View (cartoon, helix red, strand yellow):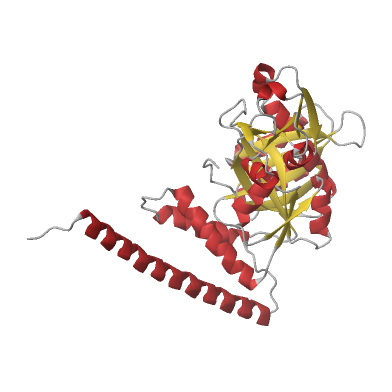
Length: 367
């Protein structure tokens, strides 16, 4: 009985891969054809909900549940997200506004959540993202809201107070900071430019390696990379994508002080999102300034067995020492226990606004 030589075994394995590639290709195109059929059905019915966040979340959850390897869950869901993104673009191309310019972490969050088939539209400031979506110039917007090291992004919370947009989703992005510069080595760097939160997240590294460099805060890390691209003695703290886009060499990698540094982003839109089965509800509450009011605000959740994932206060700007509270509640606003908690909180508050119910981000893989 003859055995295959190494070359013959390799040739046979490659032939199997070619056959599998052909079948995968055919199935992806078959899926795209069905997506076009779905688009035609929706158009005939006058429906505009081409993108359904809860539907996408359920599909990706099933992908992870049935995965048996050898690809990791994160890898297989990223592949499936790109297929879904390309198919959705056939139904209706989408524009997503983000905090620009190119190369920011917010742009990376856009692609992680929507895939690369969307038109990512940079905006110079967080307030501009809200305005672009409110005006209909973009179907969705992505804004940073919270970092695991440095806490909340106050500009985003303040914009949510007066906006009519809804939170339609969230993205958790593992953030790794890189020092980008045309300088030959760190000793030549006299100025470090980055977003204020990134400077704070790298404070210990900068104190140790660049103690004499001036630190300059700008609107985004992409803007930092753009500014220092033509300066030989300046450096930017930014994502690896900014290094590629602005052709800036990486002098040092992963310079964040906390290795598990993660930023949470919100997806903003004009549509309500149905329950996916794994949801979060965000509310804005203003309460009377009386003793014990904060306890009375939180007590209904404990009584109903509903988890409060986060509570954050911000000055209301109505009068001194008056605050708004941003609260994340696990579950969907249509769930009976969550609805009961919201009604109880509203009874104790001066004002309550549901900012949105949306699928939770369950991915925490390293970018």
